[in-house]
Amino acid sequence: MGLRLKRTARPAALVAAVGLALWYVYSSRASALPAETSSRGDAYAITLISPAISPSTMEPSRFVVKISDSSGSPVRAGTVALKYWMPGMFCGVFTAEAAETGRTGEYEAIVVPVMAGRWVLEAQAAIDDREVSVRHPFRAGRHA
Image 1: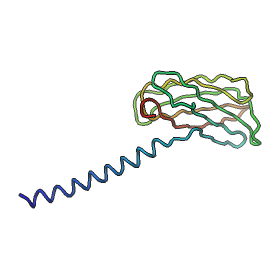
Image 2 (image 1 turned 45 degrees about the vertical axis):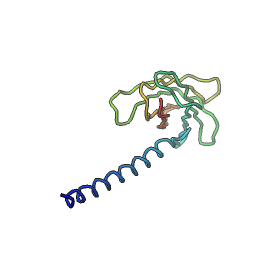
Image 3 (image 1 turned 90 degrees about the vertical axis):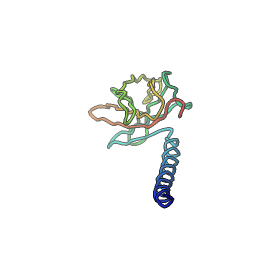
Image 4 (image 1 turned 135 degrees about the horizontal axis):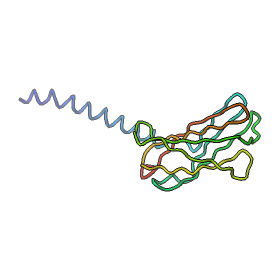
């Protein structure tokens, strides 16, 4: 009986240790999300910027979208469309409207995350006959 207990205790302890190590690595990596994410197309660049304070669930949060040409000069887009979702969850895909801030090439979007956790916000801008897009991860709620 004692030998049988040793045979099951060691693998169980190993599995628990590996699980704790993976949890630690995942939790520290998940908390280090970028404040902004940029993407470049062939002629334009787009940047998505998180609010200074992490979004709360069921509360509006202001995200900023900046668009520029290849030289870095701000550019006005014809349309800016945003959608956001929780990866791996089935809570749906939400949309947000972008409004100009008064500065050329700068738009703001109000996002309302419905659950705590990790989200992805995607912005797509149409400029002339081209399109540029970016995906930006962020955390909302008590885990932010």
